[in-house]
Length: 358
Image 1 (spheres, rainbow, N blue to C red):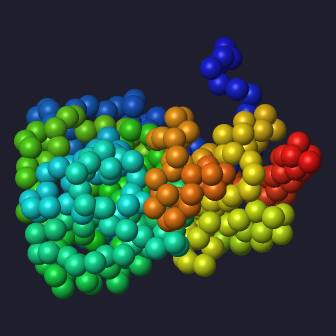
Image 2 (tube, one colour; image 1 turned 60 degrees about the horizontal axis):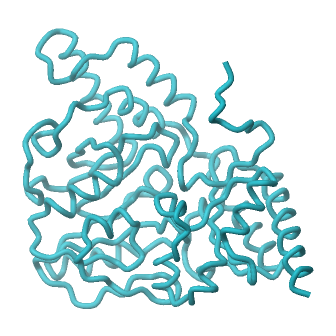
């Protein structure tokens, strides 16, 4: 039976991997196998013990794939991991960069905001010994990579604690030198509804009781966790090609009169943010979608409302310019022909806008 909620996708071009990357085959197979035979990992019977063994093995696989040598608390995703890190920290005060994901801003609405420069790089300022410093590793709207190792040194010298949202970078870049790290499975080809909080020292957090060593309540989603582990273990040879594709797209956008956001600092290969002067982002999204191309503006968690981007505002963009920026994000399936197709449609949209303005 045909799924009526799902549009015909055969001829469409998906360039919104930063919102979610479609489930990898390896993850799907691991989940299907687990769904046929799983039990509650907290149950004392043989089936429960087998599930517990599979859960702990998955934990080991995930730490090995990420190069993490400390504790892992499984969560329902990065948003829950962020909330645990911020709301259950023993630090007296939270300070967050002004370009954090909406999940951070909701979890810490009263946190002091750290400014960024016009390239989106955090300006740290003074750090106190009881501060929790919240700094995203890779920005979800612009792809800007923060110099975390340098910032971590300054924070540790002051005795502070560093928490990094690595939803966009985990599995694509080496993890930063942080005390707490949030990761998400569906950003790297795993299933939605599962993520983790990586913890250097559990003493940084107040326990809550329940599962996950007493730091998170609720039955662990073992099938999703096994899919998460399988997705992380898939080789990412495609990232090298993606770096070249993003560079080509940057050049072609500039040649077409567009603006590449934060082009003078390090950015992850999988995300590009581009401004089409004179054309609102929502108008661009509609026209790209009608042409069979999926892109986004802002973060996936807030783009449905099309509210102004707080990230671009923090970088100094006025509302009009910030409202003309879209995000193009790449994944394992992205090819050179896709760049040609996207830039061809970009040129058509820009040309139509110029003709209407003439």
